[in-house]
Image (cartoon, rainbow, N blue to C red; front, side):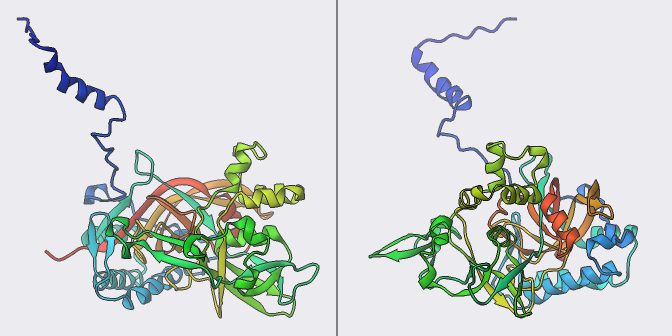
Length: 416
């Protein structure tokens, strides 16, 4: 039987035409629905929890002989942080929010359990019985995120400016102002802007190119002078490091404030300009290109308008939570999305190196880490930066890690 469609008037077509036009165009009637950044998993969807460091200790990774001690140390740092957080603070896991008290008991129970040195089977059963697991979705349809790495570099510096040591390591400028826009309207959410007063107006703060010209020299303190502008730039990228002074002392310097300009990758610039092929892109290849082309240094570095101001501490390195980072056990994520201090689990790849510190292969690994840091280039769900510590392996891993993987967060189940 055939069904006849009878159209009595062209006006009847109008609603249908509007709907079809919206479906196949960028019609403003329908807003694109953004997928959730972090989703709650059913037990059947939990990953296979394991920790390679429990079974495979690699001396090149700068880990303790007892990997449980390494993990316990990192977890204790998160516990110290949540124990001091105000009671009304909320930790967001996707659509769910948890109190500092809930975060505290989650970490305490986890710490208590790993002190028993559990087997892989015991570990998985413990998590299934006691924890709710969330996955950060990333920008991949399969839920995968993107992992990079960072480390604590060592630089050479002097307290006095000389012909050799002439690149300033700045503290926070006195004319830099941070504005919390939520105080003006809730529609801004947690957005903040950074600027300075010019006349009677608030204007953006100086970009890197102007700062490098010395425009802020009277507005801030110079902690010390560095001998290499490339080393100083990578200190900005890493966020913390050690400065070995000519007088024999060591300065532990840490991220304090950023100038408010969006981070732009010089690696991406060199890819676009075909200075470095994609398959060879790494921190080491960028450094080598700049060293071989000194006339390019100023132009390339100034492509990134973002600039970091530092403070120094008696010890380090410190993450954004104000607690010491643990090599191989601390990660940096986007604080607007991921819960601070949370027990986390990652599945990605790490490099295996030979006696000459050459990468011979990449190995899949899973590892428990704690979410304790952030960074200007760490934006979006599924985005994580692994802190590798210091030393040669840490530098290699930090410079070459650019891999897909999975990021999970764990929190104790609520009693029903």
